[in-house]
Image (cartoon, rainbow over all chains, first blue to last red; front, side, top):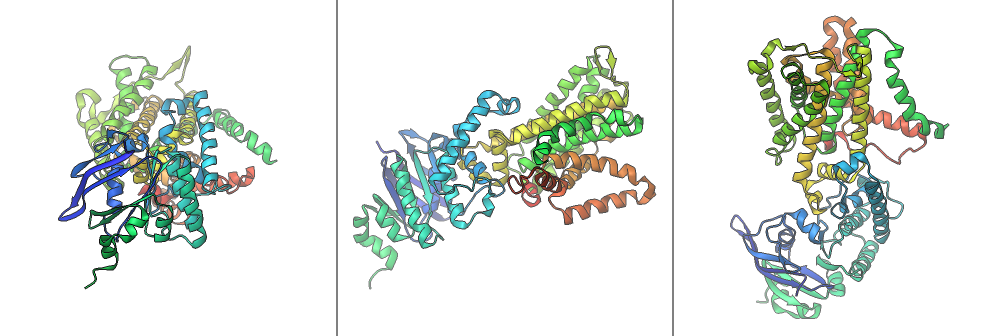
Length: 253
Length: 329
């Protein structure tokens, strides 16, 4: 059984068929990448999987459960983590608190626990901070815990975005163009980081434009164009696919 | 020195706060001290909703009034014990908070501002026009003073101990809320609701919770007010009062807990001490607020944090949360 599966997933905005009948199966433990020209519907597809858009038709199935109608926060709880193409950090909160927010759905303390400051709450907070520190170390943000998120460099903000998503303890992590705008050095550490994330047992679903990155780390690739799946396969298969070459380079007359 | 400061700052502040009735016996000053506590509670309650969660409210006096009328009516018409009124006021106000919070979930910023403004006006009209219950514009007289054992809190000085205790309680609530999983969720919603949802935060639930907690505290302030002046009338809960609370929060610093307290104290006392300006009093008051917002957008809370960091030697470690532009929008 696939970890994440979509069946005939479709959505239109006005007359634009942004995503049309996309079938996808992501297996546990793989790095699966979605590529396609600008406007192909990649981010829209992510928003359908994470629940930010409601599909017009089709289904999203996660671990065998139909989650098509679940709210975004509920999907996160189920184990679907995501990062954002346009950074959406909590800018006026510290790095530590940003990551602690990611832990939200794995902690239990409620309003009463917070106001009474019960021993369970205090213990949970301490354990949470320890867990989050490890994640910040994992993405290479040691020593930045008390910085405001907005004061980090762009590359660091991107890493915090990933740490925050990892804190939600996902089984599958959706990364939307994590390499966009990174310099060569940050790019190398990102490539390494994605592999280390997979090594932690987390399945990675990636949207990316940087082809060398995509070809070097992906197990499988799906190509979208005008909202439709035009190809799927290993990097080598996709590279030689005529429909893909046509979509990217245009048709030879 | 720095360790000394860090160790004793809270105790020193508490001692000072509780010593007010010892330092002065002037009933007028003590009445102002009570009012400062009441407005500090109101400002903190608004800050939880607006400063922490980013939900704008311009009708906070409505919850204040609901609390005041709840406890007054229970005491005057039903003859219930005063303390029951103090418990019922926040509960009833919280129910109204939920009722207002639910339909306004999709609203933010100015839109939410207008709806809460409307809610404030509706409640005012209810207080004025539901004469059989509220006695209308004439107000309710004979609201009793609370008693603890054989001690009746019927002087401004004795009542002050109740006021300051409830204020301290509110401050503790605000701090514990802010530095918890719940508080982080509220801040996350203020900062970016889309991302908050992606972190598994049910933003609907937490926004309604913020309305509920905020309204409950404002309702408690209402009860505290009613039993202090032993009289309630609709005039105390007009929209101008909501604007006063809003000003106290902005001058104090949106999102800042010490700022809320100092902002409320300042804006309660300053108009009184400006009486020597005669008719120009409110002009000077308004001008002071305008200058404050322009030249110190982080409010008094920003200064307090900086001084506190300097004195305790923790500079840069924990900057003020939130800024004016994000908190309000």
